[in-house]
Image (tube, rainbow, N blue to C red; front, side, top):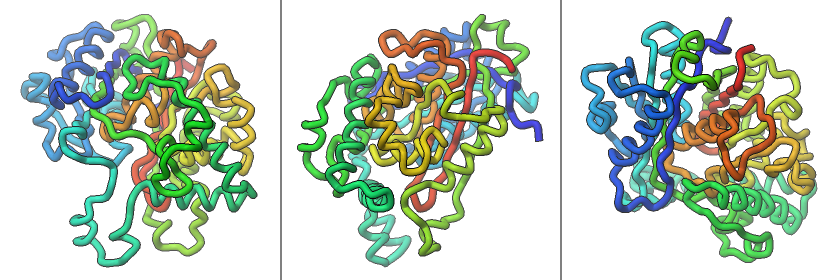
Length: 396
């Protein structure tokens, strides 16, 4: 199986400001992101052959994107895959151009959450209709990932105090990076002392361990690799694009360990094989991962083989994942600080990789990046969809 390696290139990207965008509609943010991408690629909307809209909460068809961008009479499809929606929209666009179905495709992710009253807590009425069990009716994302934290601490011999300090350092790192990102929702530094003293959400996860709910949009324009340099001298090439969807194993098996996510492991292994990556810790230059909670980022470091099992805390303490470390992670602040408009997050991750590989990330620019990875998780540790995409700044 050939896969997608070096068949598709990203020639333009855009991203709106993330945050509490009370003054902007979803259409406004789509236009902000898409027109930045158009200008970046040097094209117009009439050049788009097909488009994909990724949105989770906004229950509209692809007509939402067609209306906002006046994409008259071309195929426009809405996709949704929980928090992995943005990456799945990009995946669909990439496979369309790789197949020859069109020369240029657009992927847009958007979410308008702040006006909806959506806070990240469960839809209790929906959950009551789905199941009448106590476990389901009391479900919340912080609760699930808190179980991951307590299990991880126990499995690898971290006291609650030690564990809290480790994940607290991840929050401090991501706040530092977010402070360097002009489009981020949260642009302020914090300290470990402040993180540890913050109000508790779901023990041991405090306020600074949880990402915010944001408004925002992001967009990517892709074409076949052989056409890319007709549009720009520095396109970014897709090296691997994998998605793994779990079979609800975590809820079905009493052996589920709550300290890793099998979907991340499987998608990562396949992505590395597709891209020809033998040693991820050494070969991946930077990564944007799904830090919905600080414990999630910690576990992802091991699932993606950036750290050995049980050793990610040592790498966090040493600064290995900092901007100036051996493998910078969430260089723009991640979900934690850039924000999490659900349908847009996967494309926002690629926006940061794209800018870093082109040496256009300003104050947060890392040195000589060659391969960047995005990891986008949709769901809970027990059952989820995971996308892993690897991009590079040169053809193999």
